[in-house]
Image 1 (tube, helix red, strand yellow):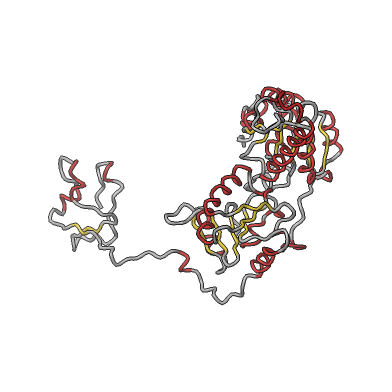
Image 2 (tube, rainbow, N blue to C red; image 1 turned 45 degrees about the vertical axis):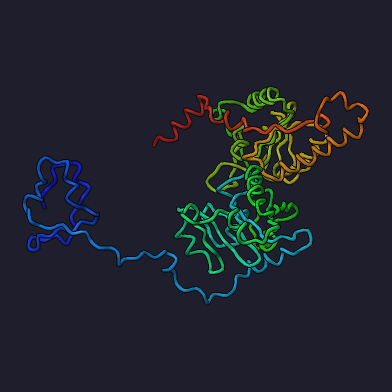
Length: 426
């Protein structure tokens, strides 16, 4: 075969059907003579066979089938017992829902999570890192992105509908719910597994069909059917991240953060992102595979700080490390109680709606409203001192802003920069 002298021609190739005897070209792409208009002379291979006709293959008889049609027939598989058990809980007192959403995330909005929190994987059988499952009283659907279309087709049983997110004609979660539920339906979620911003967006979207978003605080429905087979939460010990790698000690980091609180007019901040907690406290863990983080919440006030964590992970070294930084320990599951307590004291909390879960945000909102009502009831005779507050008593409101820890963590100090460089040396 003759080489092509022009760069513009190199992407075009001849099919194996080209022969000297037939002198016929068959191009894989739709090629025709006008392609050559830019050349002063015809390309060398066209000069050799000047009378050779160009053929464009007729593809009208070829039709593409979705890969799902090539799966083996699994229609004889038994009914999905997990879906049946989950739906039985829909009518339980205190639940009473028409649909339930199971996201991939944990309570800290992590994409990669501990095995005990892989609820979407358990209920659907799909093991990809990203996806959202929805179960109604008669349907089950899973949304995932293009990385996982083939994997999901293989792993989902016939009870599930695969929604290829981003493909033309595929509805969003809210669009699908609005189309399959009778107006006025109740859509249940575990509020710990949705960021406040995501929950508010979903609530607004399904509200167009008068559906209600129901926060189920008391228990997760998937956990209820997972029962004893559910893996135990991780409890490996955490460790102190050496100062020579961190570059800045914890008291200095907390001092800078408290300055941000004062500037924003906030009395405390709720930090729920695991990487932010690990960075701020110079701690490292192994609760999530391949990630040096531990499951915890952190509340930093202007004068103290509280770490909410399973204390079985806390070694003596870590305990001394936290004590020297003025950080107290609290049980992991007591975070909502602490939020209520702070709101009852009139605390103005800094919360990042994109990362703080809806359970925390809603708990603070309700507790704060109760605090305002109590102030009104106690000081009705002094309402004028608060000015025109549209019925409010002038009490505290939350500071809804991006977490300042995310920005501080992104500004690497010299020790961190050196560590990043060294990590690439082999």
